[in-house]
Image (cartoon, rainbow, N blue to C red):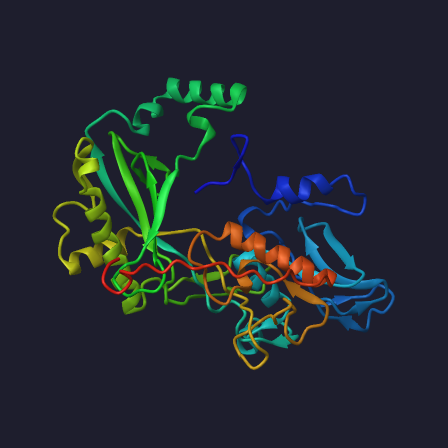
Length: 388
């Protein structure tokens, strides 16, 4: 449920980037445009200094290799030249955003913004998928939750202890229990995910509980709703327009409803008898399907798993953006490598699958042979058709 190394949050930067900063041909820049994105300037069209009349596309040859234009400043744009290829890894929001700013996307949308069209790819920014989740919260009758740790003096002591010893409550994100279940009998794979948290939080953790409580964060893993993102303007510093289109299909509404019902069933088990207080949310009054659906629409939260906006697909797929080797269709020497190229969202958190995807892409780019096939047995319960 968490990625840690020696009680420290562990992620891609210390694992992949820091060890390579000692290599003289590696340079890392940190953009200062804040939430505008990883890159504040578009890729192209760009022009060779020696051949100003011959414009070059993203990744097209220029005098000294292949060129992309990025920037961490409105005043001092950074010119980047690559000897072979440009690899875009901006994430599922910024990768399609940069492609569209560069003239790669739906031609009609780009022309409305007076962006020169380099390649008509209507799938750029489409197919947006995410995990939606809802919290089922219960008061706790025993003083065993994180509420006791939220007093200012306790928080200070927790921070000091972690800083000195890397132990204690500061050494974990407390998402230490969870699991996957099937929403109904006959479903082939688990389609609902749980995270259990020993406190009740609101507004994505910005507001904490005022009492001892605990909660289960739950939601479907394979949503069928599809959203999109588009450019609001040709200004590279403007936020894109986002419509995740959550709960737009009957299946997604049903699975969110079942998520709450199954969670209530779990929290009603005997093991919780010593700790179970009143249900805080949705609350005892929310019982009918109609009321549960209304609660979900009002209180469900983004799972921070945007993906699939530059999906990988076959050449005949009009909505595909990259091929099986992560190359952008119709544009030379440009690849996209991040969670945006997933055709459909995975059944779980995106961190490990995205790292796996990137490792595979690195092997493809370097021309290394694929690993030998490994077939692992898949557990099939005898009660698949009759029980969850």
